[in-house]
Length: 369
Image (cartoon, rainbow, N blue to C red; front, side, top):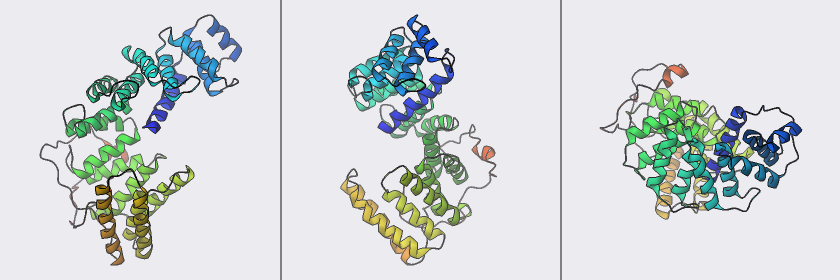
């Protein structure tokens, strides 16, 4: 969740720089003069520059002071950023309750990023009493303004029935709206719904198209998801071992370059990709490595770990017999409805047609994509 908050702050700053009324390249001395005259936009811009060290000497305390001056003039972005500073303890003593106060001031005046932040505070019980229902209310406000992270978070609630009545079809629509704004997490979720037939009819071509678009980003899990899809999709016409290996390697490389530890899920994917490409000896070695890494994850419950170990062992036996792994064919839920607004196939230049797999293969449930 902390990673999501950091991303949200980054996106907000990009919007800030693009929409502030103060010219973005104004000289620091002139900016200071405008700020001292009480111009809220100048105070905000000056505070932001001091906090980041952009074009001026970095001074977090002075940056907070200018940001607060703007926030006290009801500058919505300044109120939101001030909330994030209190939440993270940057330039001020960390105070989650005060963070929520500033988020709420901005949120009540319609700033969607702040509405999202208030929702997350309610969701996690940070600085305020945990309340999933109230969290959903604030997410809806931001989602109605086409705020992609909020649409995705609200969709996740609808998909699971947390704080709202469960409605996977409605979740799919919100995921789609966010995905069409190039929000990578939403692309992965709408792809998964098409892949499993949850809330929408099973459609492997659309699933693959959304996985493909998500993988154009630098998100390692997006690359991993596409690799798994290309290696294990029930529709044999959509399998591609060579491409699967490349995307699996890319996912691991991005993690390595970011200094992240190797994840057993990605190792499991790499093994499946190698097997699909006919490299069974390598697949066996990577699957054994996935099994070795599994016990190191202390965050999963013992029952889930046991289930994953059973799946990994089953795949290992397949590779030892020189046979690749394919997911079982999914079945659409009875209430699943198509999304006519989804133009991903046309956008990606992928021909439509029958999405039923040519051959159904048995096998245990694979890694969730």
